[in-house]
Length: 264
Length: 127
Ligand code: SF4
Ligand code: FES
Image (tube, helix red, strand yellow):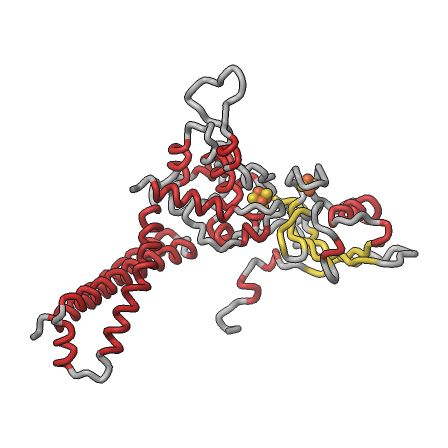
């Protein structure tokens, strides 16, 4: 096997993660937790490293994001990450925590055993530490035109929708575009340049099923493509890694079913 | 070479091909039919274990049996062509190599299908 497989599957040696700095245990701490955090600066010319931080659990909030903020405030101000709402609604703080993409602000420290490994969201190019470049996936999101499209001019009041039709949006409108699912999708890793990925497809479905929208067919046209849509091989990582408990795989299956339905 | 295209231009790429649904559907249909057809074909094969050429020829003179074997083969070849095409498109990104492999794949499935069909028909009509 060794003869066929190059070390680390032949990845660029510059991307190998080296051992980083070990920050000392805070004095007087009773219970500590160990965080191993990926550090990298795309402008430094140096490769990534894994820094080790010891956190006084007693003086830290319950979530992983609390620990990150504590590190930044009290130990190492150079640690870079995104966050805003700190309650699971803005989608900024998604990252790979203990091997799974999740929101740092909704992941309890105590639910993870042993040292807690934090990496940037899988697959996306890293800008600095836990901040990734999402320009491509956001441009992909624009392709599906995530807004209500109607030929008819807007009514005086609101667009009406029956309670039954409103329920069809449940499980889809809640998406916060954290891209945990997209970063966790192997098909997106191989073909993300053309495959739209689970988050964008779930968003597409949210507008396709909206009874108020008049561009359903046009939306399906935009998706009907061997790469944009059909690269989904129902691997289901998306559903497992959605911190909002949504099911992108189900949304994608429904889009495929609609495309089949309009053929017959 | 530096790529100065905007993220939008890159994401839109060549646009939607307006295709893929037929292959997706055929792959599902051939999976479901395959269970039935291949089971039937296996039963025919098991039934012919130890039989001599004349027995098999007699069995294949039955049009239902010939049709079953031919349909199983056709179903299998379509399924194989689509399945392998998906794998090639997933993993082969060099354009020339991809096109070449897609042609080889389609050719291979066709040749297997035709050779198999001729062989079955030959036995069936040899009596
Ligand atoms: S579907 Fe879930 S994991 Fe994917 S972007 Fe939306 S909220 Fe995040
Ligand atoms: S900070 Fe907003 S989702 Fe975590």
